Length: 132
Length: 132
DNA sequence: CGGTATCCCGCGCGATACTG
DNA sequence: CAGTATCGCGCGGGATACCG
Picture (tube, rainbow over the protein chains, first blue to last red):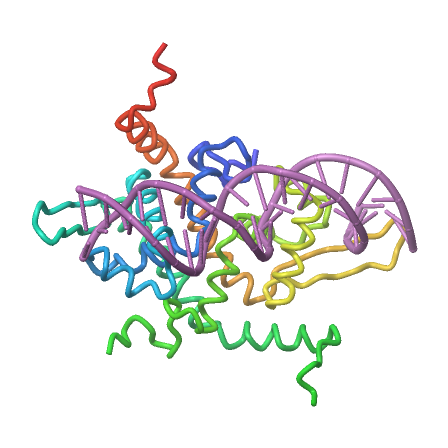
């Protein structure tokens, strides 16, 4: 029953389902942004670091390794000095990038009303510290 | 420049941009699943708890409070005994649910190849403990 | 330049028990 | 039934320093 929700025999609501771990992987701010950043084409490590404002070297590498491991990103090393490494989305990654970018657009489009909703919620719960 | 990426004047790549905090809120496994679970209509607390396999009471409440605060979920309390509380998506929430559900579908659809990619990655890095 | 390696803090989140 | 309260730990992730 309810197979209309899971036409592929996988069910992300189940902890033990592989698709659940995929969802866990996707549920990361840096994964979102990294995939979106690579959407227009390949980028170097430093270019990514600059585009992903606030990311630390550690998190950048870690995020890219996860994406590479899962087949969403391809890593290419050029044996030159100084080193040059480029990252690009695989086809699978590009496929996903379309969806993630919609989420990003949605976040940007609806940021104002969500911000307002948060302000209203704070007001209701007596957080009027700025009332002075 | 690059305004084609941010047609609404917001830029999720910037830490201080409100849309960035929205993306952070969305980057949560339980937010994903809760919104998807409510997609077909309103549900009671217990129904959600059963559908979201493995969620603790604490995380369920916390997630619902965040979604309510941000205007994605509406909470309705019925003053009866035993208590009855129902949750449903607002219009904004339903709007988002379409996108999140695509991600979930994508995760379920591509779970096999990602699982394979992980196995291959493990093999390469010498993790052949199961080779016996 | 493109990474690792280390340290360590904060808090996310789970487990459990209790209340109206 | 639908939550709160409390405790605790694991680890995500930031800061920093170092390497090829």
